[in-house]
Image (cartoon, rainbow, N blue to C red; front, side, top):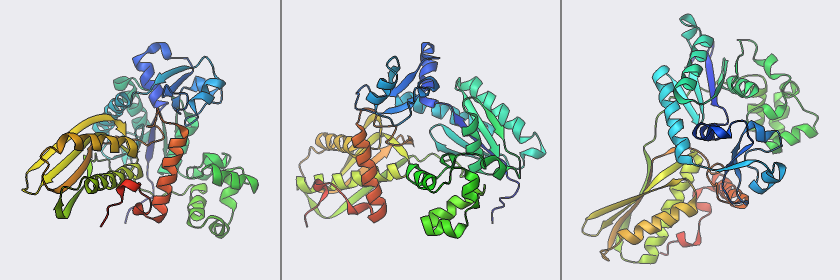
Length: 386
């Protein structure tokens, strides 16, 4: 049984991470309204500087709309490989400094400092860690320190950019109380608007609503939001480990040379592990294909690609590899698809050149799969004839 009493959890957030990386590479961008994303006006803003946010620009906004709000903004084409490099650098710094940490996204970390107060002091330790990150990576970072992950994250959000804030034991509810409900993790736009229509504007008001009423309104989500509004969060810091790859293989009952069958299998397999990537908020930078023939001779081929977890990009690569690898024209016994070079990330920040419509399509597809099962929705070409 985990002991959640007297914990000290720090949350570290690399401020406007993509923008900060680009400003390191090009100092002339500092102090300017910078938009990170695709060059296509139909694309979306992956990130933006604080100078750009003053014009009402935010991540996920269509690029054309952002340009209309700030016509003198500087648009920088995303370089996810560079962002991954800097993320890895900071991860190594944290790993070398603390015994237990969780990497919750490409630019966020939770550090468990429980027990550290007996020796160096958690606030001093976190401040020194911040300075170490700045010194060795050149990237700005903010942090929050509290008794749980929820409060530490909210604290960080309140002091960005380049800030730090400790919430003492017993101060969780007073800290949350005056904040807007939109600042409580777990409340999206739809739920937030529902509460606002009810007159619930602050976290204090939300915390005072009987838990049973919230259950009736939102089910299990209502119970969780009641806990969060009251500063309760018992989730542990999950030790960080790098997943090397994600893959799937299919051995056929009957060896085949049917290209339509093989293509359908490849589509289905690629869709399956691409959905797993998105479910885990991960991106892949390398695709590998394996073919085993009827005589058990096995061949593999791989290709390094821009980081993605989008079906249409991955399918194109898999089909390209199959076209190059399948040269013997003999019966095939097994097909395998593997994604490697995995990093944290989502399609919202990956589809730099895609349209907002494409992003919404993937969101809708994944929502349906999550609700009804992974095989409920698939491409027509993935249907394998009996």
